[in-house]
Image (tube, rainbow, N blue to C red; front, side, top):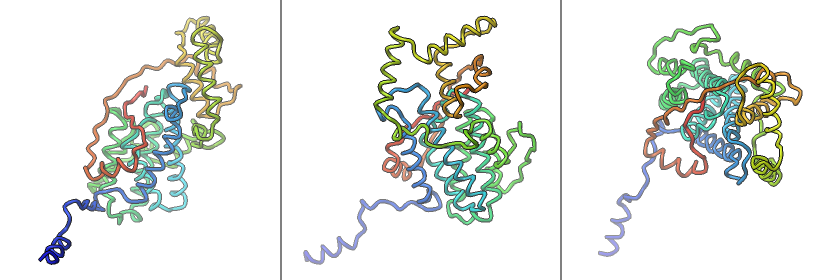
Length: 328
């Protein structure tokens, strides 16, 4: 009898067996790996993770660098007509971005909006131009649905791009009017937008890179710089940012224009670092008088399915989540 009972128990399915995710309603393995790598790359650009302080926007610009690296991959895959891999990279981008939207908190609102528009134009381009190559992905509709929702969340009520509407129309089998005007949110030309973005924000004709990767930096030197900056703020020295602030405000005051704050100067330094600006770059003069008003958006909704949440907690536990906007 005991032997019979044991056989019966073994033949019955265990109640502890984890449910297998429906492939049509979950992210693919390649996308999960991409998202996990992006989360690690973002962590590598988080000063808090290394116990160093650089400035308030360092992590945001570092995550923008991660986003640009992903878009570089998409652009290269599209140029090679490899829309399947382009789709998988964008799929991973969407999965990562659902959890971490730190790049949207950068203090350069125009750059943030340009990056969001570039991302959504990449999705529209791949979904339309590469449709014949990617329509057979079993999770195609699931991923596009997630991206429509994410696109709306990233824009935080603004109309930066009509990309979500274009993707939804594709899901619905409807036609979408496409404008040829670059100023229009209906402008979806990914290759052109990519070139424009590189011209505005790239360094030596490139975007992305590893300038913000702290695993490639001298952390002790950064900690010392942070310590020196603290001393400067206490009045025991004159840091570079403080000297720049004094110079800028002297000129602005002479022109009768509003004065800048130390945070404004830090923002200029960050944008210069991100764009690779030289010390003698004449563009600084145009940046001196910029004033920017901040507006914070509410944290976007995230109704991840329970099965995905369980997986995400294992795969992306290291990724810091941030979705509050600081765009101007």
